[in-house]
Amino acid sequence: MPNLQHTYPTNRIAIREVGLRDGLQLTKHWPTTAQKIEWIDQEYAAGLRYFEVGSFLPADKVPRFADVRDVNAAVDRHGDAHGIALALNQRGATDALATPVGEITVVVSASQAHNEANVRRTQEQSLAEIANVVKLRDASGKDTIINVGIAMAFGCSLSGKIPEDDVMRMVDRCFEAGADMVGLADTVGFAGPRQVASMCRRMEKRFGDLPYVIHLHDTRGMGIANAAAAIDAGCRVIDASLAGLGGCPFAPGATGNVVLEDLIYLVETMGFDTGIDLEKIIEMRAIPVMAMPEEPLYGALAKAGPPKSLDWRASAA
Image 1 (cartoon, rainbow, N blue to C red):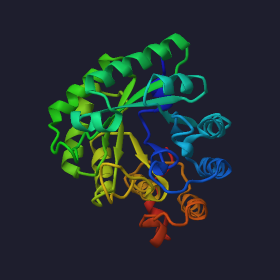
Image 2 (cartoon, rainbow, N blue to C red; image 1 turned 45 degrees about the horizontal axis):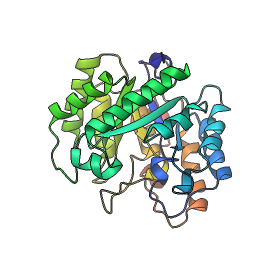
Image 3 (tube, rainbow, N blue to C red; image 1 turned 90 degrees about the horizontal axis):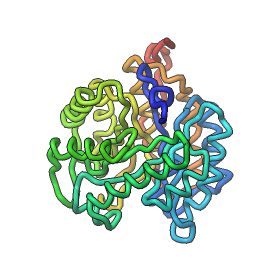
């Protein structure tokens, strides 16, 4: 069985860089394999340890992730780095399990309408698929983490409000299917801090020290506020992407994920030592600028820079 506490220690905030997967899913252009590897190497040198490397999808249909194995190999070369990959079905999971990727994310939506639009399955079919992915992992003898990302957990552009009780029932169903951990995604950026805090408190009450992921989008400018609410309510694993890259096909005009640079600053000002060199991460924006010059980049820290005083940075434990 996977050792979740080893991968996600309870006494620190795990910031997961999702720019190389979620951040690239809708871009018109994307970095070369060499640029992706440089992206990982530079962020690792700056102190990041968690990287979403891509999706295991047919290369002829989704060429932007055709190099997912090479990108994950770049993560694997750094012994204490953790690679995460998306697999939408058993075929993708089988391919992922043939690599050393440390974690596989599979997806089910809290909204039936979105689930059918996104993966062309009912929620029950997706849950059965999750159970089969877990069986594949168990049969492989590997300790790869199976994480279920619950999309639209804070509201859906197709179905509207999603009751918290419905989300928690889906969380329970994912664990019943054999998942090791779950993530709650504000896929279209509907949430506010009170809602995020409420869901995180329910997760803490239900599962204690078991790690779970909060995946936030900044569609309505609430990403950092929501991240702060999640941390205050006990969440310790948060997704973000360099320069806020990303988006969702079901939220037209939406901006992307929480900005990685801004999240690092937030976490430090809340008293958690990240071990990440924020200035080096800001410099990293040169890679997407070169690779995707037409893509908009976001972030307050990139404009203003961190304060000259070091008082904002948490002390190492």
